[in-house]
Structure formats: C-alpha cells, structure tokens
Amino acid sequence: MLKDGLSQNAVYDMRNSPLSTFMVKYIGFDEVKKQRQRINDFFQNNIYAEEFIDGCNQNLVKTVINGILELFESRKQAIGGIKKKEIYQVQSKPLIDIIRWKKT
Image 1 (cartoon, rainbow, N blue to C red):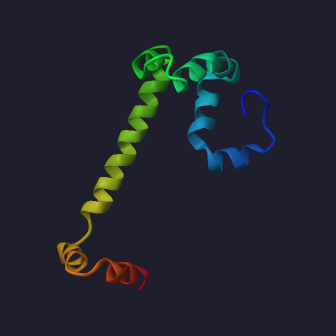
Image 2: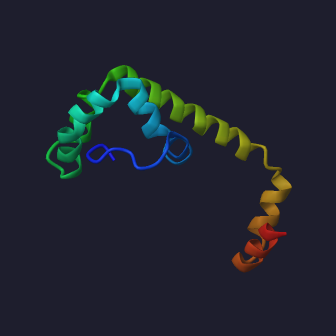
C-alpha cells in the first residue's frame, strides 16, 4: 500500500485496518514512507524487534501499547463475566458436543 498508494477508499481502510490507518494519521504518510527500509530490514531479520521499536515514534508506540492493554482488559472483564456453571457445563462435555452447544 505504501509503495503503490491507495486503491480503496478511506472507509474501507478504517474498517479493515484501523491500526494502520491510525498510525498513518498519527505520524503522517511521509514518516511512514521513511520507515519502509527499516520495516523491510525488520521482516528480513536484519534488525531486532527492540532496535526497530527504538527507531519508531515513541509517543505512537506508547499509544498503541496502551490501546492494546485496554483491549485486553476489556476482553478479560468480558471473559470473567462468564458464570462458573457455564464453564463447568463446557468442561464436562466432549468437544463435538461443545461445538453443537455453542451453536444453539
């Protein structure tokens, strides 16, 4: 996408790649283009993850980390809301019954 530009509209991008869209809006398209070589180096194992992250906009890194932590916390709370009775019901059934049970 960064090399060839967009072929879809912005609504498609926000729906299908919201993190990438946020990052481009946060640091700007020019900065993302500047990072392309480092991205290639990272995915070709020429630099370590720590080195890659150290070269990124640290405010962006912190913002993304905090967003992921918030998401995990909300999922943890949602999962924690399952009643113990429901967990016991699932644990005491064969896998095929669990699959059928979840569909109903």
